[in-house]
Image 1 (cartoon, protein in one colour):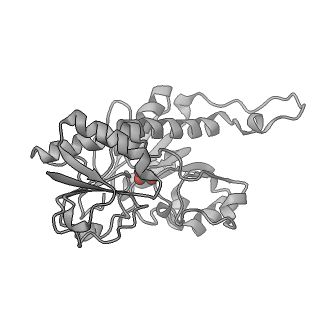
Image 2 (spheres, rainbow, N blue to C red; image 1 turned 90 degrees about the vertical axis):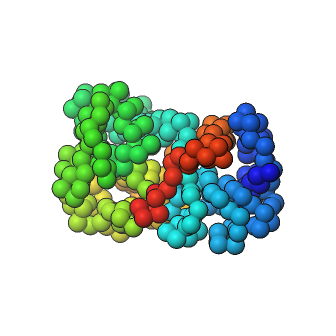
Length: 310
Ligand code: GLV
């Protein structure tokens, strides 16, 4: 009998138990699923950063780890992990991310703020937005989430250029790679979306020098990880107008401390890491389908490469 340990935040188990059990039954997996197995008994581990487990070396029987999060930078011992690790890939999460990103792109594209804030009795003309087809959108990171966002934005008419470690142009996006490609994306985009994983190669990617390469007045939307941007450099670039606005869903330290300058900065919109929260209704079936395939010997999908960190 396969024993699966679920270890996430204190309040998570009640939300996940039923969808996970239903998915296991649906996949025909006979397993003991529990939030309380001793480490010595767990064959498989379902883990989120809210888990109290900080060390995977004390799990002698462990055969695989399933992350409840798409981003896996907090998985203990990520770079030395000896068992396969799957990151969360869930069509429901991809759709939610595409919608969140599209909503925030459209806010800036259409200049919605004055109307949403309220015109206070003043009937006046507002700047006319250009058609979507002449608004360049750049997306750093063209994985599951970046591609989903790109497809939706392109469907609206935005020209989308993505930046990825590798990859070919698709029907909905041109793909750039490498340092020169990054400079081209930064320099062309009026709206820049960050959906990269946080790894040794991407930490601090948008530093002072690269922010200088951005198209002047660019709007940055970060739905990836806070560590992708150097906060002090971003503040400086907002002050000079080099960057026009930053909509941030993720931060170097979360929760963002109440006294952090971002909360009250006129050119920063703070969103409390809600862009595409894992939803058990869609994520449990996706996770368990992968788990079942792994148990059948079909290999693990969405497997993290410890060398690349995602
Ligand atoms: C959330 O940030 C995730 O990585 O799933």
